Image (cartoon, rainbow, N blue to C red):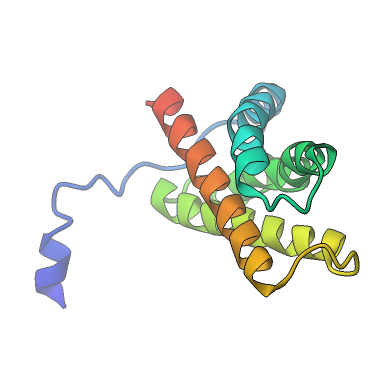
Length: 141
């Protein structure tokens, strides 16, 4: 077990969430717009064709609107002064899981999607979140 930890010798686990809440509020609209710009085209291309373009565009705006404030305001406050790695793990797990659940809630009774299309939709949502995370990390760097 301890041999495995040696692989992470050069990783800086000291990084912490230390941004004041005021700065997070200032970042919220900018980050949300960037998230929409990154995620919406992926959802438009990746969600099943049984959904209309309007529905796909709405998903691009609405899903992030539901999760982004939690990822940017709530979770950094909870993990303030703690490892950024832990925060990122929780935040980047929470966002796609919550968005998949919200997507399911919104479309479950519409008879638009079969089992394969549900899986396809969830993969598109996860991929969109990973892409926006990657772009965010590039900007953060």
